[in-house]
Image (cartoon, rainbow, N blue to C red):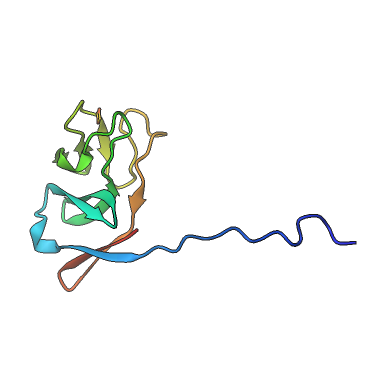
Length: 115
Ligand code: FES
């Protein structure tokens, strides 16, 4: 007799898509940009010369994180000042609250994000 669940469908695994989002030169060190990638806004950050990508929608009340000020690797939401560590997506006051992070690569001066 077969065990229950043997014929269950495997869970679908979402495949990431690598998307070119900007020229590296368009996002200077210490700045962030909001990029609309396939209908999903992300905050692309150049923190100390390394690029990071996090969800642009603040988990407080939906503010545009990518329009905030960057201090080192901490991005501050312009609406009410929640602060986000862009290397992990974690909120600086409550690290259990995290923005989604996306892998970023730079190739030949072009920035790619895996969405
Ligand atoms: S919406 Fe970002 S801090 Fe309130």
